[in-house]
Amino acid sequence: MKPLTGKELEYIVDSLSNEDLLIKQCINAFIHTNNPLVKQEVSKLTTSLQQHNQKLMGLLSQHLDIAPKTLEEAQALSTQQQQQMQPHIQQFNQQNMQPYNQQFNQHRQ
Image (tube, rainbow, N blue to C red; front, side):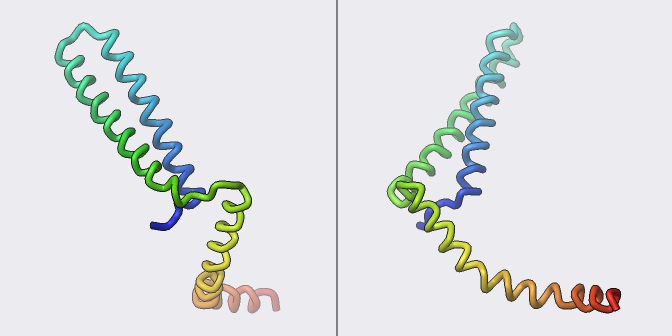
């Protein structure tokens, strides 16, 4: 298993934050409604959101052993990932940007 990237971690943190907000809103709706059907549906939704939250936390905990422990390790990993992607980016640019570069050069003349 590869360590999560910074963007993946940001996405998971955002998801956890959103899940937490939804859980709080469901609890608030449950407290303030008198309709038993609404209470039942909100209760189901709250349970589902809590399970999803626990699943995300479980996935994060699996990465604790392989995650960088220091800022230096994280920076080194990021640099390594960028270096690994560089040939792919160059190849993409050569294949896909060549027609645009030709058009640009023609217009400059």
